[in-house]
Length: 315
Image (tube, rainbow, N blue to C red; front, side):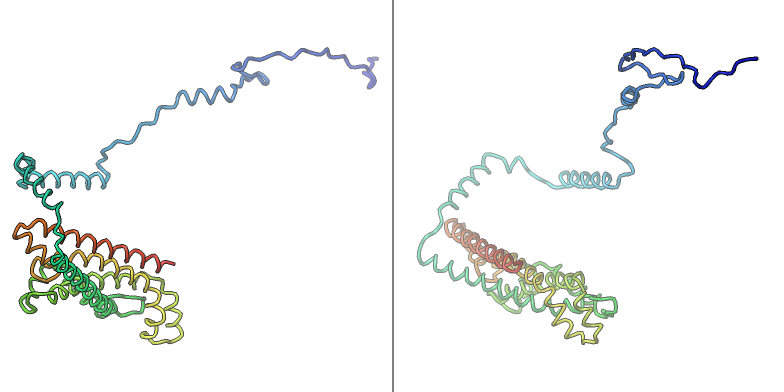
């Protein structure tokens, strides 16, 4: 009989083997299959990857590229079509005349009698700009209400007609308004004040209307749901919400009207501009320099006051 192996038969002893060292780049063999190390595979893939090229400057499908090309062509055509005589402008005679003109401007007139005239003209310019801006703010607010569609249920029947009127008012410059009003109002600050008011009404009316349309309608809608009348909704919701923005726009236009009022005097609308046109016409450079300094000081003061007011409103 064949003897069966006993469960208690001693198993053959396995001799300990010394672990073999492997080089870092040597493939690993598992059950006869060679595996490549991970870092080796990654390095190979990175080496085979092509370098990334930067995008081309010109792309026929890029709309911005065509727009920039059109602008460059327009600028080039402008230089070609205009008769810009740079040679005469940079000639020796022109430069010497400009230097002599600048030297005369650096010597302002400091006579006491003339300074009093400049002071009263400065106050007149300031009054023209302030009154013109105030009238424009009132008229612009009155025209902004029918020009704005504040909510979905608002019919806004007069919106198109009112916006057309505002566009017409602001499309005509202040100088043209002043020249037209000189026929009826005559020379003096009245024509300049009305010219500022008419042009600024068109600007502020459009800005006010956009403010009413773009502001948050939460408080106003809450009042409408409760059946409150539109007039009360405007007084207690729309106007308080938009008031800081309206004041900011008004102050900004006042700054612009200071500069415009100084220029309106060229057509006889009073103020510093009228003195500037008079003395420049007579080539009195010392008096012209004093008037220009008064304009710059007035604009700087109004700009600073407007900036401080806007900061106070933002707190």
